[in-house]
Image (cartoon, rainbow, N blue to C red; front, side, top):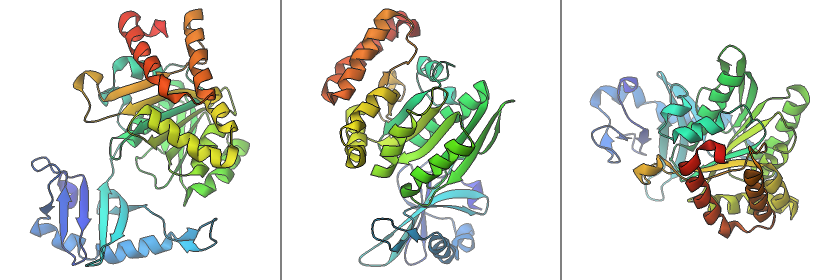
Length: 338
């Protein structure tokens, strides 16, 4: 059965044949699904079509019913994230990304140990943490591991807003932590859903699965300003920290204008860039900014204020110098330097 095989993606072609990708021996090459699995995937296209149709929702911009771009789908012991394209020559192709069966420990993902330590400190309990990176760089895995790690270590509860839900975050974490995992049909639902979460749940952590539109960008910044006892974690595409911040602000400004940069300056706690193909010495995190709200010393406080001033004025281009200085400080003096 497929559940017994090791692969990252299952691709079902319009003619009903299927390919596997991300197998240990073949990497990114597409290889035929073993003959023993043919019956297992024979009816999958019909089931996937029904699942997509059942999740249609109203587009607030046009008032028309549209299909979700991706859905979560369970089949024969495997959870998949599913998307499809319409090939101009042949027909509908299905792309099924295999999802992890558990949330890994943050410290086991190959991130710098000092960065894991800092993100899990009790003091880092407010503001916005952004995990940026290219597609398929493991952003959601890292963000989910951070949510689970903080709930396990410090207790409290978290609420997720994902489309679709990817890792199994829902349930108890440690002795005093719990996560409530929810799916939204589109990011236009975020304002109302987050408002309800605040009113009735007062979560310690809010996890926004991915910032892909102006709705999510706006809400990520706004909700991160709402409490000194609430952390907001989100992922966003970007090939570097500057590109990710530019994308976030461009979207947020469609609703909030100049307030978007002010909100970013007042709410950002950390942004890390995850790069699975970067230099080994960076341990998967090639760039990062850490802006603690509780600074350990006057020098650190002045550094953070200076960076927040740059965010407020949208001087993102100069942040490369700050990131380089921060990395050198930690290398020379450890976390106490920031």
